[in-house]
Length: 119
Image (tube, rainbow, N blue to C red):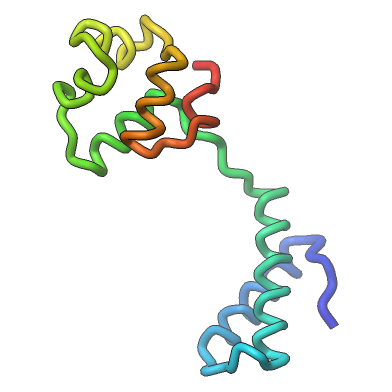
């Protein structure tokens, strides 16, 4: 029977069991498949509580996404407007406007909840 993960030892055991199940060729409608799904949920909850991942800084998210999409800063200027505005935003001197957030969300597909954070 599966139980909530309450400490690091139980967490390590759950990871080992998950790994073991993932090495098998299990059917999607089997007990092992259900066990793997429940273990994954328990592991996720434990990790969210004890190893939370901080949200990205809006400026870091923009730079990261530009790098992923192989965009230049001049291409970012076309999204944000004026070239000087782009420089002010990337340096942190100017905050993103609602219109900019909408364009960045649409064009770069950065979630709005990342872009609206204080920085």
